[in-house]
Each structure stands twice: as C-alpha cells, then as structure tokens.
Amino acid sequence: MVRAFTLVSVVLLMLGAIACDSDEVPEGYELVSNVGVALGEWSITATPNSVPAGLVRFDVSNGGPADPHELVIFRTDLPQDELERIAIANPEERGFLPEEGVSGVTFIGEVEEFDVGQQRSGVFELSAGNYAFICNIVEHEEIDEDGNPESHLLEGMYTTFTVN
Image (cartoon, rainbow, N blue to C red):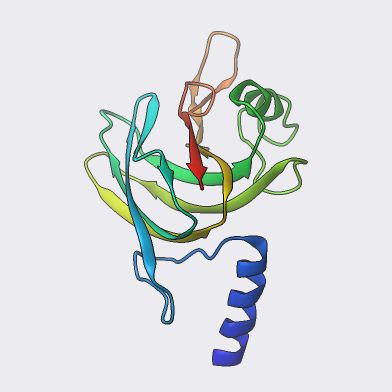
C-alpha cells in the first residue's frame, strides 16, 4: 500500500501536481503558500493570485448567495475566451470544460462542490506556470432563453493564477 502511494506520488510530482483529498500536508512535504479563494455568483477571487512553486493550500469559501460551487484547477496558457469556446463546443455537456483530453489544458485537481456559507480546503503541488481556476458546474435545472443549461464557467466563474 505504501509502495503504491509512493509510486503514485512520484508520477504526480513528475506531472507537476499532488492533489490531496483534504487540507492535510502529505508526510515529507512542506507547505510553501496558503491562498484564500472566494467563490460567488459569478466570480472567483484568489488572494494572493501568484505564489512560488511548491505545495499550496487553497482555503476556499462559497459566498453564494444561492448556488453550490467548486474550484477546479487547470494548468494552461489558453485565454479565458478559448476555454469558454472549448466548453461551449463540448459535445458531451455544453458549458463544461472537459477535465481530460484537451490540448493545452492539464487538469490539476479540484475542491469538490459545496454549499453556500461553507468552506473547504485542498492541497496541491504546483510547478511554475500559468493556471486557470474555474467553477465547472453545469446546472441542467436552470435553462437560459436559448435552451442551454446554466454553466458557471460561462457565467464568469474564472480567474487566472500564476506560480513562479
């Protein structure tokens, strides 16, 4: 079991990210930064929005006022409008940015969906580069005037983040 975890950790480090299911710092690692992330309708704000490479804890709060949100982290140099174009063209689910198989976009990890007024944390090993933070929720219960489901990304839940 330990051997399998070690192998997975090495592979993820080679990819530039270790994601944890909690805010726990993995044994043998040292936290280099804490980042506060505020989610709301329809924005994401990271403070600070740039950190040094290494193990980073994201303390994420959902200010609502109405919808559950999530924080999804992608490594990418693509601009917001290109990510939105990819999400709009997604044949599986319009408005959802695929978390795998998109050229120029690498899924790092996520802090899963949680309700208004709550907080969650996630710890990720980030290498130097440019990142996009999005809420990748698509609500099929909410349909716009064109018959499309409400995409939190397309509503504006996007911000950039830099790791030096």
